[in-house]
Amino acid sequence: MQDQPDEKRANVKELWQCPKCGEKFVTPNMWHSCGRFSLEALFTCSEPHVFQLYRQIEDLVRSCGKVTVIPQKSRIVFQVRVRFMGVVLRKSYLQCAFGFARRNENPRFYKIEQYAPRWFSHYCKIEHERYLDEEFMGWIREAYKVGKQVHLGGKDAPS
Image (cartoon, rainbow, N blue to C red):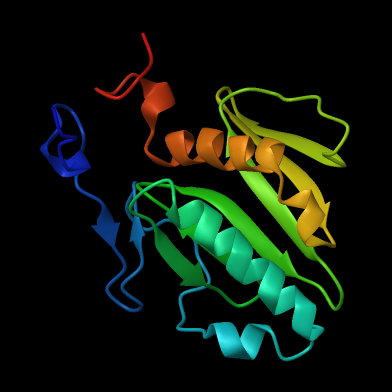
């Protein structure tokens, strides 16, 4: 059976759309940078290999399914229903943040922050494509499910 669009699922509300910038959110009037930004502008201060790393990460994220890529003032975020992963550009590397429904004490994460009972942000540094391994892809898959809000018990929730 094919997945239904999130808006068609029982008890799943349609996303609120900011009237100024058009970004969508699960709750009305959620704070955001409210502007239109380009990938090109974000990468002007980064070394060329950083853009290549970003493109590889974007391809990995897109392999999970439908996703919206949102360039913001200081980062790029990936969203299904909610924003589940972000990338901050630095001169010679990327800082990736994943939203998980659980804490993951993996030593590759240099910081973990809990924002809600089922929302933990995990941060890692990506300097080279060798870091884009199967473990990294597993984190993308896990965060993508959080982006779909599977952890909240929707139809796609694991049994």
